[in-house]
Length: 169
Image 1 (cartoon, rainbow, N blue to C red):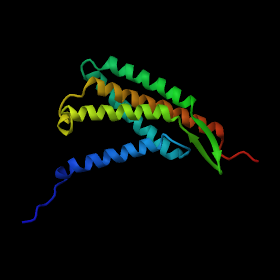
Image 2: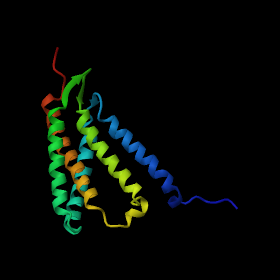
Image 3: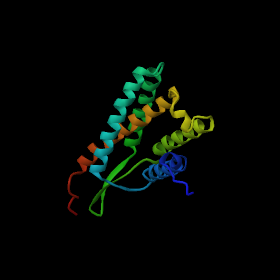
Image 4: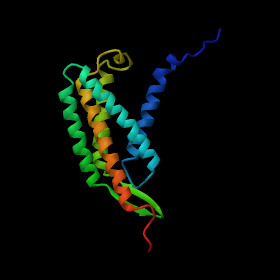
């Protein structure tokens, strides 16, 4: 009798593939010139703002999480400020582009990767979903979300300063 694969049977195989794809995209966005895609940035900003609201609600309900999450948010804003200061925006071949600072993005990606590895290595894999989230994980999430909000808003402003059309040669 053939075994029918259920979605919950595929999850342990799909999660590593999904995580690898997310990390690949994250790392790729840290290096070299990136074409400015305003719709994508606005969509990302809206999604991150929703996640920020959820994190804010979680900070209220998870015991002892408010202060570490506030600290994580401050760190995220500081990294966003540093990253934005070292991001170069320009017109290239008639397309608005920006070159992000690879160090800030690399530090955030490495921190996220190390936290995920730590969590999975210490029994917090898929079964950790039912447990209460750790304060460290929530403060890192606050840092990543605050960074994304600050950086996205700053990038939108910087691209508006470039103008809608390339300068005439």
